[in-house]
Image: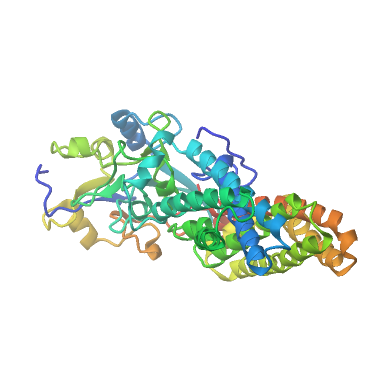
Length: 298
Length: 201
């Protein structure tokens, strides 16, 4: 298959969704909507205090989502026909819904980014809130979307459960908070600590969902067990990359940092965010590839 | 075979008692449909069964199952993949965008992305021949008459009678896709070791 396959897992098998561009799209799309969700929720909590966070999320979100979508389009066999998905709709296809969901999302993210770039008072608060709420709803629907599409794929037993969309939603939010934290490095330490606390909570939930998914695998069908084994047996990817570097280490460091002095936590949270981004990417990659590693077995 | 396909349900029986795994079906298909190197619309897969020292190697011809409830049709965002009234699942290469959703959705690995067109491709039961009243290339070429093709709704057809008079099975029946390719005497059940190895082909 032409493209940029990265067969660290399941080598020797042709994977329809094995191209790095698709995996980056899933990662950036999730990161973008996660960044917007945390930014707008922060704005709803305290507009003045989190002004910098809101701006960071508002700018990062459309850029990440659009880059992801462009990569996805370039990965299609006939990229030029990609826009026909808006005209040739199919109600039964989750991918068809996703076209509209992400299409509207991009529009509202761009409008909100423009609003965020305007001077205070240039756009009425009610208009800003209305646009933000619409974008928030679209972002909240997009956060689990890729996992949902995967869960609808008949025969990909590892994906066909509610854990995968849930896990993808948590990755979206954790990586979103991480990227916003990185771009909020100049904000007050208290603001960064708030982000750090949010990150610790979502990272904890992400860890629980992942452990539930993987620990249940041996009790489910042979296909689920086989796919989970492919992931678990890769020590570097799963145990070191995803669990240790991407989740456990940042969670411990994060909790330690936010419990200490706020001013001292800022540099640490930058490092934590980088680790979360690496872990989020590797986790998406691992789930996507492992789920395709056993399907040819009749 | 008639040109009027109304009321028909095309299907295939693969009789493993007669199949020698000679790959003639794969070659005939490739030749007939200009299937590119490295890709297949139908081919013979090999499996190892059992654990040492009780090990054997078995083979299984694989082809699109033209499922009655095809997951590929559901997955396609542009309706480029569709099912005809006579049960044949086809891809419209004029509207397919090559997103591979159908390939991921297919539990049988029966699809590939054509490197020249960039669109999904798969077995069509040689529909261009079928509509002229000629059986698919793999069926015509099978030296052991292991592939039998016909109308599953026609009580006079060979496939109809083979299915009723033999123990037949389909691939992954638990998925509810209702495949329309039936196997006689197929060693389909995969072993634990194959599943745990993460591959079966």
